[in-house]
Length: 432
Image (cartoon, rainbow, N blue to C red; front, side, top):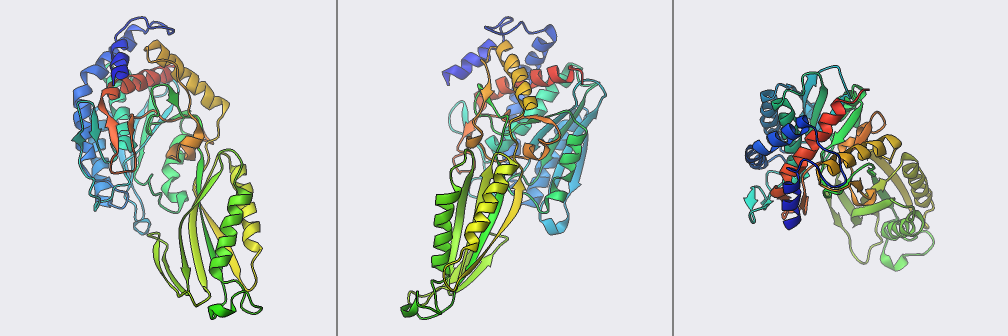
């Protein structure tokens, strides 16, 4: 933890390393972040202790209400956007201030976590003086709180009156509601009214940020064979059966689709046998079969990650070609469902990284480089990447996200919040 204490100490210095001198206003912003730090950590603990697993609709709404109060207290207008009941998603929180000067910003977070109401991992609990176990504390309630308290520091200094800032918190980032045309409509509309999007998903460190994210797509393969006594397998009129056909397909996916940089695909679960009952909504099912019966049905469901839409389309075309080349007396079909688009690197994103890099140098936190997109998952910022320049990974630091050992590093929150506040301040004072 020693290096993080060094970062915090360096924030107080008036002239820092390879950076430029911070302005007097910027020093006041940093002082406001420091003054609010204890309150910020209490706020984080409170919001973590409200369960908001994606399918806990009441919990997601409760987190939204809690966050909304924080934004109202600093002068933002807040709106809760319900999703249709059939989507089984709670909705989204938007908070906005409506100025007309400088870059228009969209700040992106999400209210939900992967830990549902029945998860045994429910409470914020200190591990030592700097680390806490926290369900969703790192992914990404910590990032949400960084947004709120970075803006609070600016508001405390009267610096938001002329700015247009939209803070958008989706309620279903961990499991997006379908159709996407509804669940992401307001986020995209907000992007169309903005110049820049900043995502506050988990930080990868003081020295990295995200200018590219891979997209995510689902796929499902179903194979069919002729049910018969296993003594006749491979014979004319009986053929190979559904499981052999599925095995062929997966093996050819591995050998022929795998290879391009940043392209990955993963079969997440498989069922096969004489009878298969598959629960699509909950990604589970049951299979019945015997070793002396040729399998009649098999189902595999998986995911596909890609860095560009072209890469996605090329992979899908190859997968379709493989699926169509069936073993004797079998058939197969594949379907795809879009989840997250790709956010490829762009010149605008790189330019934003340079702004953050300068902020970080000026604050003594060291330079910031682009993080490898192959090491990040999908995120909501990807939905807006075609409309605005984007930068992500500005949230809290921690470890083991999506596991019962998820942690958040409390000693880094003040420094990360201060950096976010200075970044926002400089952007809203940059001409469009």
